[in-house]
Image (cartoon, rainbow, N blue to C red; front, side):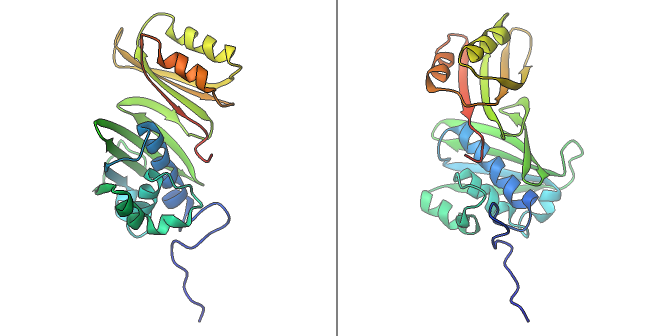
Length: 225
């Protein structure tokens, strides 16, 4: 009888794990959260919803999300030992499960990660085939898939902000593929989520970050880079 393969054996050249939804997609969601935090997290609370809540241990989604938070790519052999790698890195985490949330996609994970005094919250969905959708960042609706170069700008809600940001990117020869703006209220904080076909240069990002009405700029290149 042939030896049974582990759920973390290599399947093809781009994924470690039993399925793209439970492994590749989850790793990518974890990597997005890591990029948004900007560094190795010290702690994280990870909540799996609906289908994920019932299957995350058996299908390895728990190891996959920890691997993503460690910035491992989807083809990294260390995914299967990510718990050990996290211990070496001094990264601690807890898991929660919510099995019946009618407002959530079946394969949803929420990450609340902290490094020093910085805390971020990311909600992502694994859509199958390794495709993800980041539906929320720090309480703002977003809706990007991280396959393009993504810019997340938190800024004061002010007249002309959208046009100004678009002009800055155009002057940098950056073509906007998708753009959405979500705000907490009129003249309150707004979140500009921009997906671009090409990468952004460091000078443009620094310029945007130094505008008095911009609070924070997060740049996420294609998540598989």
